[in-house]
Amino acid sequence: MNIEHHFLDKLKGRIRVAKEIDTLQHRDNKAKHEKKWMRATAEALDVELGSDYQSECVPISPRLHRCAD
Image (spheres, helix red, strand yellow):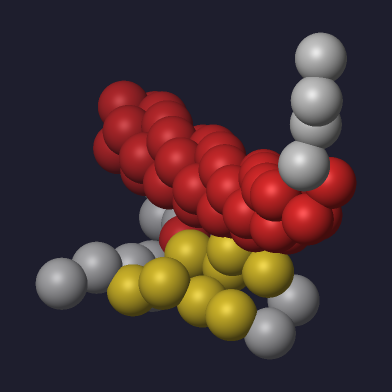
């Protein structure tokens, strides 16, 4: 089987980027779920949450935050 290695190098880069995107999306979804759960639990217990849970912004990486539209 003849493999063209220059295609593999390009493909590896694209796969790496796709994995990074998937990781960031997973972190974003997990953080949103945790915040939603904390808010619902606090509401059910009739307690107030700290300011960390009041913001609609979710950290998806150390330098990047995603805020609700």
